[in-house]
Structure formats: C-alpha cells, structure tokens
Image (cartoon, rainbow, N blue to C red):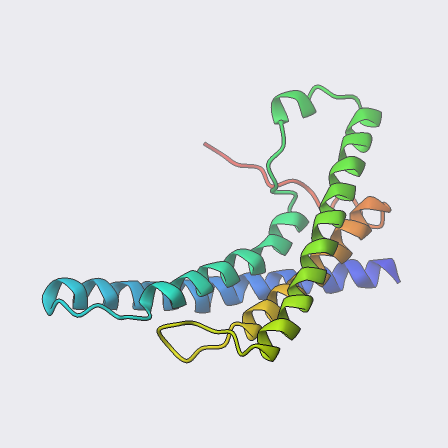
Length: 170
C-alpha cells in the first residue's frame, strides 16, 4: 500500500510540476511581455497583469513544492549534514520531515478553510473578474499530496532510491 502511495504522490508531483512549467511559465511570459509592450509602446498596461501574474506564480510555486520534496531539494545545511553519521542523518531527516508534515497539514487546512470563505464572500481579483477560490482549492490539493509525501518519508515508506537527493554539477 505504501509503495502505491509513493508512486501516486511521485506521479502527481511530476504532473503538477509539468503543468507549472509548460502552462504556468509560458502564461507568465505572455502576460508580462504583453504588459511591458503595452506599457512602453502605447502607455496602456494591462490593469490586471500584476494580479494574474502573482496568482500564476503562486500556483507554479505550490505545484512544484511536491517535486522538490520528492527530490529532497529543500534547503538544508549540507556542510554539516554530510559529516553526520547514519543515525544522526536519520534523526535530522525525521525532524525535518515531521516539521514539513506539520507545515503541510496547517497549509492544507488553511487553504481549504479559505476556499469556503472566498466563495462565501465572493473574493477575487480587483482588476479582473477572477475568483480566488480555485487557486486556494489548488493549493489545498497540492498540500494534501505534500503532507502525504512528508508522512511517507517520516515513516520510512520511501525507498532510498526513490528519494535520492538531486546532485548539482557546477
């Protein structure tokens, strides 16, 4: 069962990241480029450009958090971590995953609570008729995957090969 959950969270993380990369980033490029062009050529920027860009940036960030967690790409003090023995590494990983789970649980709860409030009070962007609740719902769904991934990591359900840290070459 845990291997199935690891595969599911891994698959969903990849899909969310790809949506951000292939939909969110090009949309940002298009909106920002159009806004700059209109601003400097005809002195009429998009009134809603900044708001929509900020919402898309947020969605891309939250959508990519899961893949970052899966690849163990979060910031840590590698200068110390590489010197730790296996027991201390396991302990620090457990503390980090526990804190990550708590963060993801609160994040998810607040996102879903915000959806209800946003729908109830019809909250949305000021310069364009765009409701906020779909973004909060998306964040909550990403939070569920994130919390599940941290829990799987915390309880040792993820094989070491599935969560190998990403190596950077400089």
